[in-house]
Amino acid sequence: MTITIKKVTTKEELKKFIRFNYELYKDNPYSVPDLLDDMLNTFSPEKNAAFEFCEADYFLAYRGDEIVGRVAAIINRRANEIWNKKEVRFGWIDFIDEEEVSGALLKTVEEWGKARGMEEMVGPLGFTDMDAEGMLVEGFDQLSTMSTIYNYSYYPEHLEQLGFEKEVDWVEYKLTVPDKLPDKFVRISELILQKYKLRIKKLKRKEIKKGNYGQKIFDLINEAYAPLYGYSKMTQGQINQYIRMYLPLIDLRMVSLVEDEAGELVAVGISMPSLSEALQKAKGKMFPFGWYHLLKALFFKRPKILDLLLVGVKPEYQSKGVNALLFYDLVPVYQKMGFRFGESNPELEINKKVQAQWSAFESVQHKRRRAYKKVFKK
Image (cartoon, rainbow, N blue to C red; front, side, top):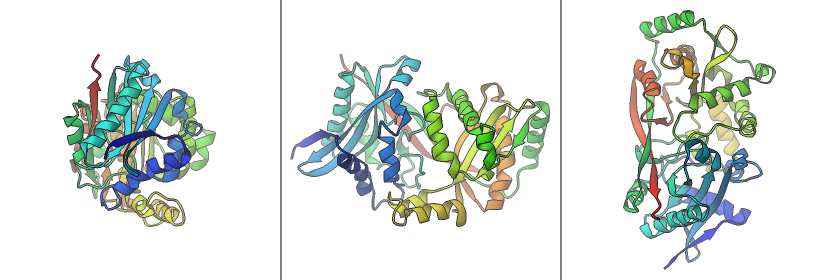
């Protein structure tokens, strides 16, 4: 039966778009479902500040009345301007193992992009770097995280058959929390504190608003991440949105800040208990019991694994060992809280500065994900 592509135009269709992923992966032990309400907000121009500079449409693939695939078509005008590109992004792509389906979805994105003057297609990417990005190409037998994409092994096979080529790879590490920080690591960290006249800052809840630390953290992330692949600086609207969404949930013991002698922020590390298993139990829903599994993982019966959500160092302090200070502070916290392992989350494979920070720990590179690219024929 012929594959039909239909643009999502109603909230009910948008819910079907989101739920297709749940259905496709409902029996997969490694996939971690997003929360339905979070996804509805992400795809809403009224709720997602990225729509200040992004345009998007969402498409479902049907065989008769059955949904067999989905994809988002996105143009990030801000990133295109910064990187001098004419790219359309494809994101949130899922499909059954039939090339007719994947081909129809990606052809739709191509035509949508061409109609808007784009010259190439890249993905999977979201609206911005704050969204999950990259198609899993290694590590299909590893539990995913709440901020990454899981996909079946046939996905990259389809992309390559359809003429897509590697654009960039990210790698992920699983780290073992040491029983004791190595003496050499401690000595070096203490020397760095003295040499650059730095201090470690532990936040209190009341200081976030009073000291404007939410703003300071995201300003630093903007500065530190600016040179990275495809990055477009967060707007003030996005920063305000992330401060509201995420900072109230963070256990401040698992946040480390480094300041200079003038009190300026030079490094930040944010981590939290892994919510992967809790999200699997929630099955995409906060109610009736999804909230219980999430709160339990965050505050009561923490898992043995943590997620390293963000690590950022001011450019002039990079390659000076300042990122070691974050773990000089955080590893003893992880030990006290009972964590045994950490997930690094994706790092560009060419970003050797970041990967070098794991050399002091027992670690294994256990996942790899890829952004694919296709230049349109003229």
